[in-house]
Image (tube, rainbow, N blue to C red):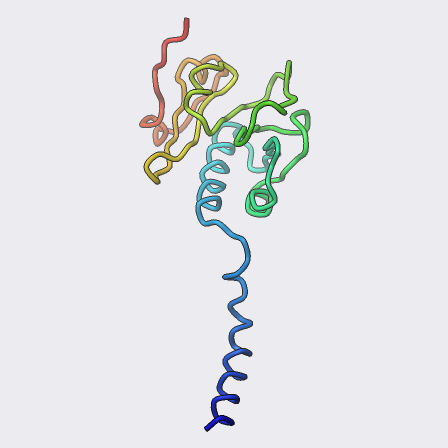
Length: 155
């Protein structure tokens, strides 16, 4: 009986190696976020090949996002900047012709450089785009984005 149990455990351990990907640090939330940001970036820039900069990018983000976009290490090299983490280290001052997105609704409202925001609320993804900023940057998006556009008066 012990021999049979030992053989069974050995065989199971061989098959168990096929499932080690479950142990890897991987987050389906980040994957969904990356898909959404990729679509937004491509639709805003009208380019298929996007250079994305995420300040203070984490290793898991880089792993997931790099399968969809070209990750760069500075604002100057980027087409699209997604400020996902702390903005303190953002060295993108006085840079024009870049599209900025944030993951914070308050930052979106308080800083005119951001075209929009992607954030999670009640475990659901939310997209907000500011109409005036889109118009100012001459960005025309597909009708599917209309439900995400807010007419926020900026004075």
